[in-house]
Image (cartoon, rainbow, N blue to C red; front, side, top):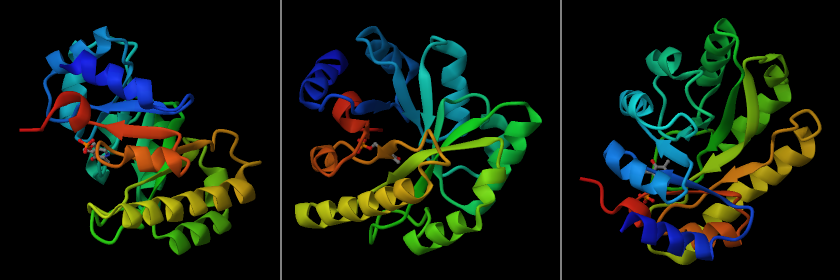
Length: 220
Ligand SMILES: *Cc1c(COP(=O)(O)O)cnc(C)c1O
């Protein structure tokens, strides 16, 4: 049961760690059940699905976009979500910036890192991200507020491997925060951890976990 699963997770989640309930592929009814149990932050990975849910669900839900964002969907998304967790390329950040300024909003974005060996092909490599930050381009992006880092561990059962991936993500986050924290007042979110690895992620310093299956069950 959704409310029961949420209770169990919240009982174990350390204080101050945000829970993003990942509702992708689950119907609006399931979101509503979690909402009625008090959940307010939800994660979606497809623009069409997200927009359809926004239409029918309560306005005080804070939506996080967590999937790879295609450039031709940016215009439809900006202004609709409270956080884009998957800022995975310079090209995408520039487009989010342009589209956000066009409609007079500032989009909150996380920089998605690529450290895992297998999982996904999207995200910045650490060196690539450091180099781009050094250019200072982000300082001129009035339409983008960089709020931290998102990352995924390798898709494996090997807990040591997962832990070392999270450590690597945390190192990059710490370095960016030390170097640019003064310029980026909202840079205080480290999103890592999913259903199977969030305990390890919070031990390694995560401030935001994205949990789908453990709340809503298996996606069809
Ligand atoms: C689907 C997804 C999740 C949730 O995964 P679960 O294993 O169902 O908890 C978290 N983060 C991202 C980026 C996802 O795409």
